[in-house]
Image 1 (cartoon, rainbow, N blue to C red):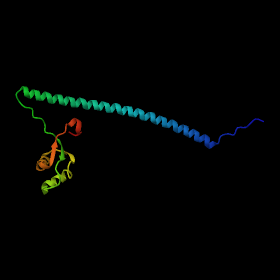
Image 2 (tube, rainbow, N blue to C red):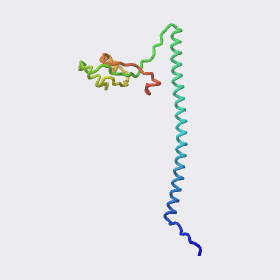
Image 3 (cartoon, rainbow, N blue to C red):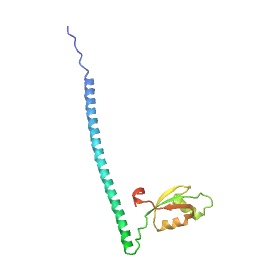
Image 4 (cartoon, rainbow, N blue to C red):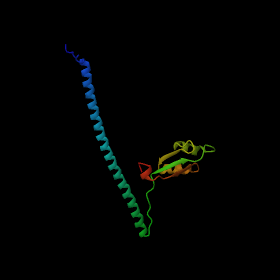
Length: 148
């Protein structure tokens, strides 16, 4: 008598079909994500090129204006910086109350703390008041700060 094969349980068949469907969906999602990533990379690269061109043209314009002023016997006065990098260089000993309060407002409570500050008239006055306790300078916009 020939051997009879037992049919697979219905639940096992459904489970296998479901797993197959999930695998296909997962592969489609991976392919879609790869395509989206490629598109995003292209967009980011294009933006980078745009910003690079923009910075280069601004630099060329600045050089042109300086040369033009020099050729006419004048000086080119550049725009004031909008941002400063401030670092505390002295400790807490023997700090007058007014200067201590300014340092607190600038979030410079410890030595070697550093902050970016937007430069306006009141901020310039505060920096002048605490100059013995701080060191500050102006970052190059293209490389250090986004909102110059």
